[in-house]
Length: 340
Image (tube, rainbow, N blue to C red; front, side):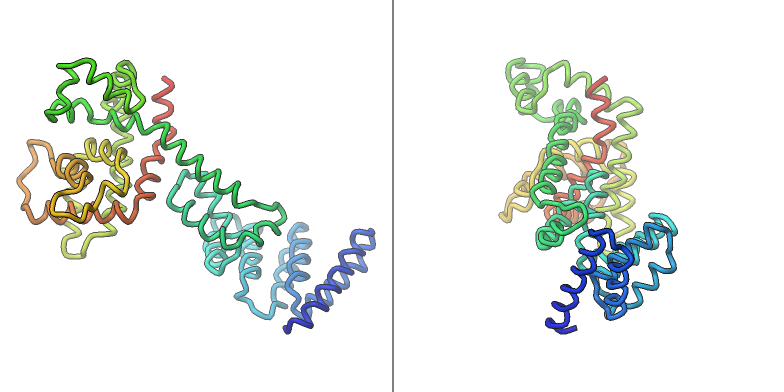
């Protein structure tokens, strides 16, 4: 459809809309039907919604067949909406995904909203970047959206994470601090210990309460859930040859308490120093955390430990927001512990 024909059809569509607004519904719909048969996308869309609302699924489907390009993002999205209304949300997920991949703002927003609901910072941030390029389409939606409002939703996720990070700080802190010379002052110098807690927005009573919660059945279940998510993500970075060995180590011997505690306090700047010395992330989260298995663990070859360390550090650098999403997945359990 050339631009001149499109402009004529758009003008005719507006005539039909004016008739509908004047309560001359049949006349307005007939104009849209004529336009739809010629492939006018806006008319197809509006008629589709009319019949979809009436549960006239076959008629709605037939209007989609008038589209000149069946792979056009709007048509893919409408097809997904038809499946959703007729067969349910789960049946429509793949179709919505196709529409989102084709660049339909409504489909992308649907996945963004789901990511926000699931507190998935990584996915929400990624989709927000795509939606920024579709700001005009968002504003033209039935329920207009503004990028600034979507940005606030992502910011709120980060704010929720910051609320629970102090609780992660406590995870394994008792054991970790007893083994680190510079922090032994917890028991030797009360002022230093108090200052150290204040840096993480904690007081002694809170620290002791959270420490007891982490070793309770509820706390251990949270660590198990988190470690399972970390293992699944980290294994995506492993080579086929070493996958089984690394999975065995991560599943059965890795020190998740210390790793999660340290990782929650790290930023991408703490990983990959690029110099000859180990990065902060490698030294604390990995060497003194994940790869410092309990005393009863068997000996592991240094090469395997090195590969695990390199794999996890590389994963963290490239997937920082995924790591944050995993930490945030325990928000409900942790906030309950905070309130108890």
